[in-house]
Length: 357
Image 1 (cartoon, rainbow, N blue to C red):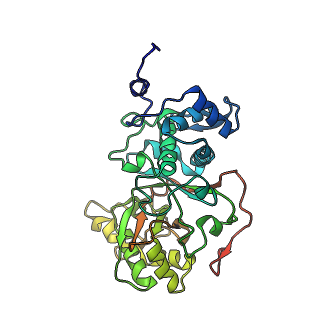
Image 2 (cartoon, rainbow, N blue to C red):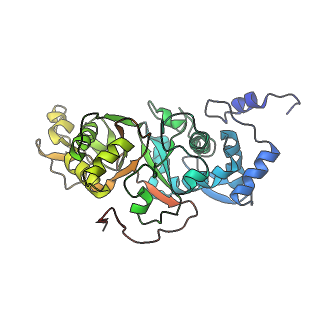
Image 3 (cartoon, rainbow, N blue to C red):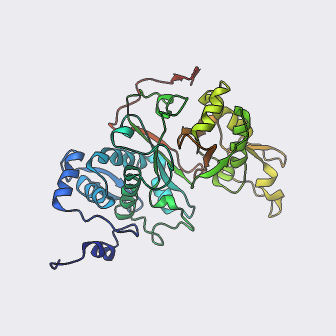
């Protein structure tokens, strides 16, 4: 290109951005990022749908630099992309759906502090380089390698702001419960990434309850609508408990298992509401599990089991707020992966006094 070319504008012209300016990948920045990935620029880490482009380390490094990442973030982004391209996640469907779902990344373990991630105040918001640029690098790869360009292969009717960046860390320091990855069999010293296709966070406000049931009834209320995909097509969802709410719940002697079980038993819709009282014909939603009763007054759980509710503690220590994050439905399954690719150190974990079988 000619000398004096405005590189930021040139990248806009190529269509390689997410709509915001990118950092030009200079040879020095690219070399440092490649080194953090282990060199071998032509090594293919994965293929990214729906275009099924090859994600080589060279291309990953370019997108990491463009997103504004530090080299220390590279292993987290790589692990997240390997998780997203697991068949169970169905990234092809998530990229191309008309729904607003976007991959949410939750990071656990020592890497959170090592790279300075935000797990506290404004955890879903702006202000933290690691959170913002890790999520942005994932999105740039989904755009530039996967071809998920809006209006082309990305057919989302509305989208949501998480399609710029959607990345948080669990607030393990303020949580009264074992971290999410420990519940799933990893050691506390392991660093992991968890990915789920989710909507934007739905706020749960409760400033009055001084017991677990009161707070969780508010979460159940947020979950119990028939306007989100879980209600009509089951699948997985996430619940983020703020530290103040978590402390109150733990003060009642409740464990993670108790919380998820309570939410599963008490978050439900009446089948007649989901079926619109058969106003538009007696059409049963084929996406709901077959064993659900299709009687008008039957209770239809939001998700099939407590294990389909993925629970995290995150946010600032002040403020009695939590959040419900609906998933995309049964079409996608979340994936939990160690950053170094290691398997869990144990089978079903016994944490918080509860054994998970």
